[in-house]
Image (cartoon, rainbow, N blue to C red; front, side):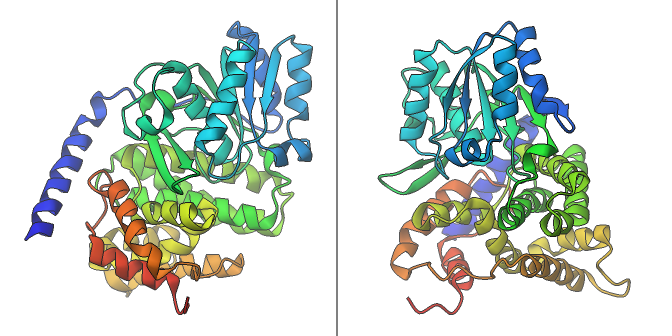
Length: 407
């Protein structure tokens, strides 16, 4: 009875949120697209009369030399810059505070987020701290806690996966408690997004695979959820098509610029979809896996997604069958359940082709109580999932994801 009452409350909460969506301050970033488009950023800053900027990135991208074109062109245009390159995977509160000090030290007026999801999350949180100087990061957890405008934020993705260049979320880690949580606010949506496929050419295959499946997860979870609009459905379908057609090629032929550009656009569209339609238990569980065991978020999503989709059963089979039809992987004489199974198998096959394993053996039974609590706190009541799950459901799911491990 208790679960029934809670489920009803969650559905009412989600319905109210969906009805309020058109009234909320949504926006999309202005896009700069195509090979070499990162070189347009200095001119954009000049146009905006911004002379000091903070670049938030990570040490790997600095070592690879991916920022050279941007930094050299900033110098030519006379724009001063500070670089924070200490962002770690799943950026920490300490990362945010250290970058914030640089922002103020160099009197910056804008932020360039350069990299994958981690630098973008860090940059968004820095922007949030600039706008709310008296509010610690830990108090921004949840929905609509920032509110005030952040400095001009330019997102330059170097992976095709997170969609962070268009989303309102920043996921931050607490290094002391191993908790990962999202800060969600419309003001965190970047003002500009630079989709330059040349920046993704040096991605190693395993990163291409994990981030590509991250984008697929965004698109699938948003499509099967209950808060879709015509725009989010279309964006999700277009994203799934682009990923279906190009991820394997980008994985096998890293230098294929056309495939890389298509994956960047697919990731962006998946971001458009899930920013308004939300995600689901795949993400809630993946965040706990990342927090407890250091799993990269995209890889965790890729492994977890087939397990969760199977667990939903009939609650998601209709929409999954539609996706199977959309990609042409279902047979005409198959029923809805069979088509849904075919789509899940398609995802498993994609993972296998890119050497992504099917289980996360590191999961410890002793960690389950806290992990389940955190996953439920993230997902319920916000995520408009096909089926509301509770503690006993997630315990079964975690064990299913864990597989035959004995630890």
